[in-house]
Image 1 (cartoon, rainbow, N blue to C red):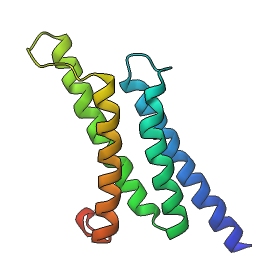
Image 2 (cartoon, one colour):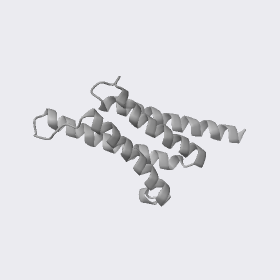
Image 3 (cartoon, helix red, strand yellow):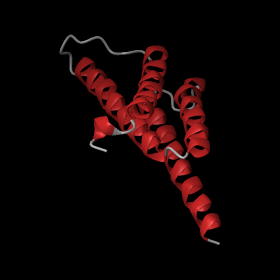
Image 4 (tube, one colour):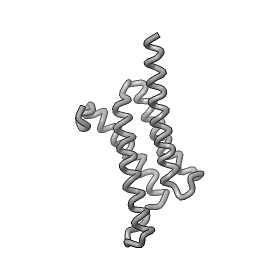
Length: 120
């Protein structure tokens, strides 16, 4: 029974992380119905699948945190561009692969370091 509850909890956590990535990717896009939303969501799905198999949900959490940090940077650049500060606005075609790459790199770093970079 405990093993089943542990599996359900892990699936719910991974699903929550995927939901966060999907919502954040939709917010980043000028057109949230664009096909480009699939780039970070697919990357997150691959990372979540690996994290579930390898039982490295902490690394998935760190990766989603890195993804959200990259999303904030992209939003800040877009806001600065809209305010006329002279900063070029990142296009959707550049922003989506960039945040997906940050997600993958943060997960790889979490696996390589065993979570030590985050105080673990």
